[in-house]
Image (cartoon, rainbow, N blue to C red; front, side, top):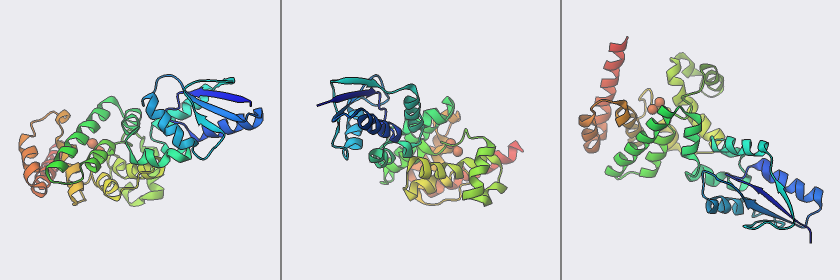
Length: 267
Ligand SMILES: [Fe+2]
Ligand SMILES: [Fe+2]
């Protein structure tokens, strides 16, 4: 029996890597391919092996292995760049069998924020996620969804105006009338849906409305409030935070008014 062992970080395995494994097996005439996780990754070795097993499930001639046997092959740098692309949020380029789990579980969500945003923006996003989760918990709402919306709400904030325009022309041309800083709240849900595969309507709606404050579901209000008052904003928001824990609608109104006053002053 001819065996080939292929190693890479597989953080996570991409569709291109899976195609390469199939090609190597076929062209080399191997009866078995052992797929071995090698090197450091954002996920632990065990987590990467679990994702690999899922991705390899349909292929009976390929197995996850801790040890290498037979001929050895290491995947090239180009494949590792594709892995990074997936970690930056392009989950639909991951191997087919793991796309759904990457969209539903936060394996690479923080990595996607870190790779897409400035350090400052990534820190802000984590704080918004934390405060959103806390507010959802206090109000007996789904705190995971609140954390998710908080973490991902600014994921397209670093996009250029041109890139934003390109997407909005297709998905929401009416938003082009607004100033460019509004764009990201409408491009983020498009990115979440089309690149990450995230479908939760409540999360997408909260993110879409977080800049203009046009959403009034409890999650919309939580994200709007948390975005404005999280601690790295650098002002004392004790009053707003306390109010948000008692009465979301009232806190939304207060923060909305304060934001309007602030915009007036800046003019
Ligand atoms: Fe934002
Ligand atoms: Fe924000």
